[in-house]
Amino acid sequence: MKVFIKRLVVSDFSSNCYIIGCNETKESVVIDPGGDSGLILRILKENDLRLTYIINTHGHIDHIGANSSVKKTTDCEVLLHKEDEKLLTDPVLNLSSLFMRDISIDKADRLLDDEDVIKVGRINLNVIHTPGHTPGSICLRIDRFLFTGDTLFASGVGRTDFPYGSHEALIKSIKTRLLILDGGIIIYPGHGEKSTIEKERLTNPFLT
Ligand SMILES: [Zn+2]
Ligand SMILES: [Zn+2]
Image 1 (cartoon, rainbow, N blue to C red):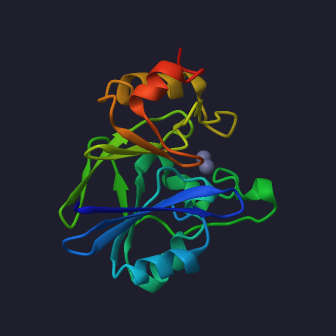
Image 2 (cartoon, rainbow, N blue to C red):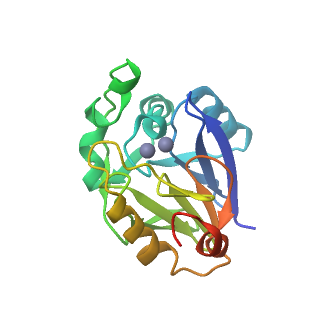
């Protein structure tokens, strides 16, 4: 198989950070380095992976916390949807001020848009803009794998009681952009265990 996928549970908020690598070229991408940069860098090294990009599914602190420390060591580029750009540098919007530590993260190197395709070795990551949890929340699809950030969880959906959250937009995003995908696609959420599109379509209590 050409795709390497490793889940790491990071930060005080038990966020899922995913390391995705192309087994042929050894290029890689880290999705949501929320914390624990040392662990992330160690796994990259152990697997002989070169980091090309950090991609944030959205701009909350538990998904961006280690952006700067990982970038500094690897010289990768940081990518995030354009509508979450201001969250990186605003401690109120990125929620770090809620937890008594105001954190401003370096700006993104490139801003993403719906339907962008990010190439990492022979892997294509397709950007699906799914506003609701935050205005610039995205999901990332690689063939049969879908990384859903805090938009869709196994048996749950993202919170919308933070600044700029919208429950109506969230449900619309999930129903019109995610549940229409093939049922066998595996979901890797920003917190908790994996699932499938079909399982969530049939049993997620927030979507029936
Ligand atoms: Zn979040
Ligand atoms: Zn989160």
